[in-house]
Length: 168
Image 1 (cartoon, rainbow, N blue to C red):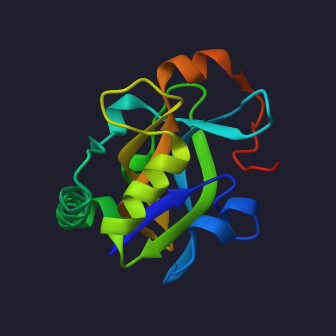
Image 2 (spheres, helix red, strand yellow):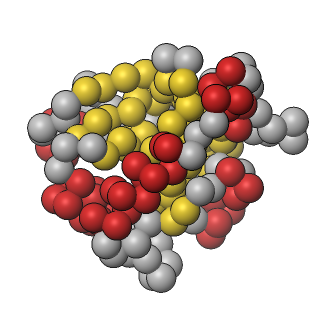
């Protein structure tokens, strides 16, 4: 299985969901720690604290899916018992960003397709990076792949979505 956290146009009911998310097995509400910015066209851009990033995506979708499964095994009982867990950071500006976790059973096809949509290619500068990152859903913490803004894209965006949800 592949778990992908989405916070913008890939969410259920938005234009990219129907086009890119056919075959989704399960959709659940979730949140991650971060900040939402707005790009010039109004699309959201997620910024996350680098200290919580578990890994960056590669060109090997099978390896990335296996890494996600391995990281899920590494989540300790303490993480699950702690109401803040790995999603708590006292630094100013980080907060809960609301979205959905999409569960797919075809990571070998899904990751390359999503990477193309987001313009992500490891080692090449672009607006987005695919990161393995902790998310909270239904009282548990799990590693999810998500597309966060590259530092250059975040610098050029404006913090506009203090609600932590797009659209606000």
